[in-house]
Amino acid sequence: SQISASRLGLAVFLNRSYNEIENVCVSANPSKDIDGLSQFTEKYFSQTLDHFNFNSMGNGTFSQRYLITDQYWEKGHGPIFFYTGNEGDIWEFALNSGFITELAAQQKALVIFAEHRYYGRSLPFGNNSFSIPQISLLTVEQALADYVVMITELKQQLEATLSPVIVFGGSYGGMLSVYMRLKYPNKVAGALAASAPILSTAGLGDPQQFFRDVTADFEGITPKCRDAVRGAFHQLKELAEHQGYSRIQSEFALCKPPTSAKDIQQLYGLLRNAFTLMAMLDYPYSTHFMGNMPANPVKVACETMLSGSDLLANLRNTAGIVYNSTGLLTCFDLYSLYVECADPTGCGLGFDSQAWDYQACTEINLCYESNNVTDMFPPITFTEKERELYCSKRWGVLPRPGWLKAQFWGDALSTASNIIFSNGDLDPWANGGVRKSLSSSLIAINIPGGAHHLDLRGSDDADPESVIKARKTEADIIAHWVQMERTRLQSI
Image (cartoon, rainbow, N blue to C red; front, side):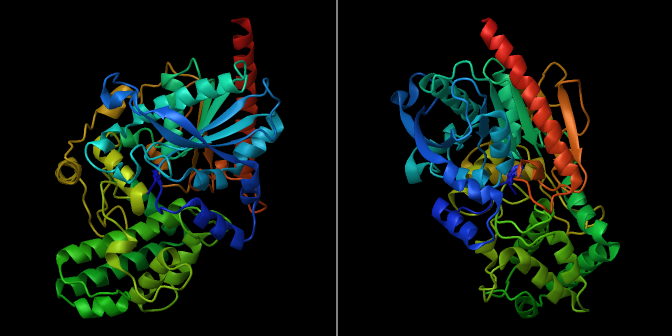
């Protein structure tokens, strides 16, 4: 789920054009994030196709989209706040990261949101970008090189060579911000990495952690909620074992009856994904990020699960919070609402989901499983071997499980500096990231009552005190980094 949502993350899960996003947002109650829409200008940057091979692609280029606003910038002096775009349309992240523009107003910064290659409209080979071998240029390393080239050239164009650069990102974008500071500390003075699961995606951690933490969010409302979900899945399993497919179709309002164990597995995945998204996006107000969510969706889900004795109907209606927020769907299409892929937390739909699936098949480790013991979901494994088989069949690639840890340091971060790792306690990605400060300049900020990168969102009256405090701490640290970098640049 993008971590993207991760887009990590994971992170992003719905492939919508900017116009569709804008229409969704404008029809809802405007928030400060959406008010900031008019601040940005959409531009395109001529980007190198392959940064690491001088012969391939004939030194070709592609058009990489970015959003920019100088509304608050003290030209040539104020810092540059650069968002390292992740797995989706860059407008989606700009619309849901209002803290960055709020901070820019305080610190007189230029703001740039850069779109990740192979996502949104930044498609190196147009609609052929997801063919083999064209997709082979989709790597973390190429994306980071895109960002450092863009930063370097835009600083020259804007006469901002003395402006310190701070990178920001959420989920997979937060991972990229960490990597930018590790890889290009000569260009980037500091990084705010919100909800960045840099440990679990490098293969460091427990495969059971993610769905255990999703379960904990619902259990936190009341253990009865967890028990009701587990009970509903048990009833579904009993029906499936007796091949009660027509009953399953009617109970879950499916467009077609399931006919095989594969269809039941797909239904399990679709239902589990609904709970995953509600846990990630458990914000204290309604949102339109990765779909439409009510305020406090985990609480709403638990109320729905406990609304009567018909557990299967309750489970269907709970999934409907995610898949049928408009109430317009008359039935659920198992294979169009959810696509099984190399990310068990969900890849989303459309072109963006193909790009994320490829990344989850190459560098980014997402071997998470549910087991119905430490979590409330049906047992669904996703082992390294299962990943290998899937990725070989789908993309003709073999994953490299140890590469991310070697290339981007894994948990051996002690010699790095100037990185904030922020995580919300409600976020199932949090325990895949850095939860304890590693030094005076590798700072962990934990946000009680916070969901997936809540601190990057714009201020809201419903914000818990914990995120208000976190943003103030982040602002103070970033101001310090900017001052230190300005002194360094002026001394060169």
